[in-house]
Image (cartoon, rainbow, N blue to C red; front, side):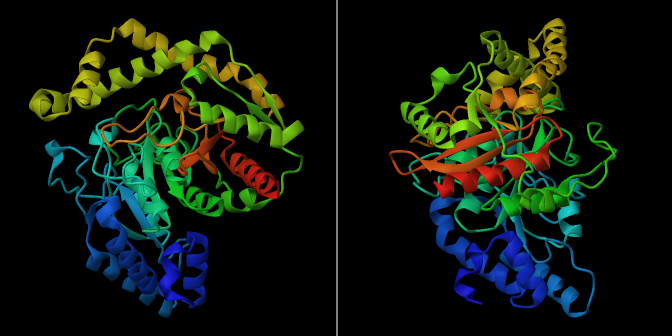
Length: 445
């Protein structure tokens, strides 16, 4: 196998090659480290990286295989971890100087699951400040003058630039889908509560989701299957039978999928080239895609999401506010200040709207397999002072629906332009199957 191209292997192919003995985990990690050395000075995706520690893990995985010990589905495959997710053997600093040098005592549940699956924890990827809006150092791998998005900026950029085949992030508004769109990779935000969040910086119990990035749909399914589960320390997870993500995502749909093109009440924020691109996409899909108009009254949902997010952030970051607000960014201080002023009645009203919203979407999902809508207003904005508008992700995050960025298009400037597929709650595997059909259909045209 050509060792000079190992860094661009998919996780699925890499795991298979390692299991078959065609390549070692050490070779794969060495190739990824070489790619990091070449690309990191410009992309700056990593907050913490210890190459020798990554190689020690890889050699241990190779020894396990040689000695006949059980190998998991991600055996020997390197994975990047957003720096708000606890790792017992690496710092977790949450993108803030207030947590500088923080080293947890134990792994987050998702990190434990990755280790159990045989993954190599490559290092910690850059996050925005406390996974909010103030950018970190990461740049868009397609054009370093543009933002990679946020808050999972390093995770998306590391996968897009060939540093690792997989990376884990989080989303409270648009922090997986938007950077995946800007960086041109698949980004998956599963149904709320599907993946345990224990050991991850808490912003909003109502809105926080674990998400992840890959360059192929097969890899998204592989990672989803490894991470989905129950943890009693996360009260929003529940015991459930194992979901066959890999098998389902690879199947042909029993019926040709029907997609609902949904502009949402924030369509006025879409760039002209985004509008034009979706007109072309919908025309190409023909009878398999139909425009579905949401009521204008749903515009209030964006206010409900902000009320919930900022009120819960104010509680969860209360210590940071009390002890170090002068060292927080202006944007985060403003969010926390607004959150501290939210009235209990307004918060409760916003919370009660979520099941009502989901009930209202039942008719849509009885007719359509998925919603098709932009992942972001356009391509990655120029400049590094902001991470872009999350508005096209807000409604779906509030409702806890599974969402996937599909890297289908390019803007006039050559940067990626993402399409977002959204499914009904708990239809995650079916959503990946629909995405596979969509990609095949577009490529065939």
